[in-house]
Length: 471
Image (cartoon, rainbow, N blue to C red; front, side):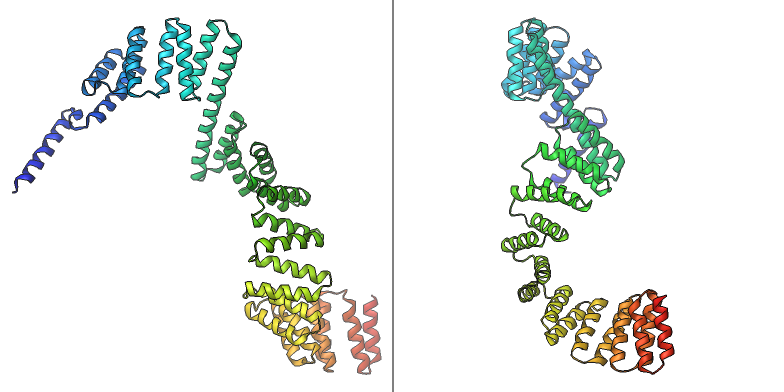
């Protein structure tokens, strides 16, 4: 066997034997050994096992004579037993190694406070807070010193700071617990922790944010709205909060509140397209077509690839009677999204209003290619075919529409009208009968059947159907 492998095996065996004998520090680095011993010191000191604490601390200092953590521990031990000058000396040794260690300055301040050297205690406490301003215990210690020297207002102020920081720390603990519970699917427990965090620290924005997101997912929108309103007060420049609030208002039908929220979001971040989109959609739903049109046009000006806006612009233009402009907009939208059946359908409708039936038929057929199971596409195609006199083709399309939606009396009536044009009286009557079965008060169907019997010369039957209509 090669010598180097023999040597490695011997070293490993020796290390394992030391660990088995409990001398594990012999196989660790000096820093690791000293750190482990310092942890023991802290544990012994907490249990007031002073002899064991001294032994472990001295051993750590033998390994690393100026190890800062060991120096701090020795200072703590000496302060505990009242050797205050010695404790300060050890703390200073720790500071020499780590000059920005705020905890050590606090400890020195406490040693001086026990010696009733109030000014030095104040100086060191303030030095600690200058390095780390969120030390709750240091504020409380400083408060006690000011109380001793008669500065009661300062004592009260620093005690308040200490309590405030302590509550904030507890709130962060609750927030973290809530996050852990949420990640494991414990929703109710997470909500309880977030609420407790907010109770402890009403300015903890992350707790409001997490709670609001969960409440939205649980459908508890009223309380979610309250959370977002609190967030806006805490973070007034955060546009996303206003956007999310606007979405909830819109979902709950509070459209005026939603408009206000989206307008605030747009003011804070004009580049985010979806606030514009929601605002435009609300105006469209409210029938405020001019305002909606302005918003949609502003949206595509800044974000020309949002194809859905072209749909809405076209629909508004059609409602306003601007058919030619609507056709132009629909064609632009189709270039952006050529596979959207709705675009083709809307274009077909606009072309139909222009009496351009052949072009309309082409659009309807393209819509059906993209989405064959929409009865409206087949119905409008049949209507256009009927306008060109292509009755047989229209019948095929009406039947396809009825196959998709057999509960529409209007489809049966439209098919019946084509049969009347072809003078296929029995087929026409059957269609109108089907329409009446679906909608018994469908007056037009009764009139059409009466008309058919008049054409057949059966006045009695015609009168009978007219009477049914009256009934």
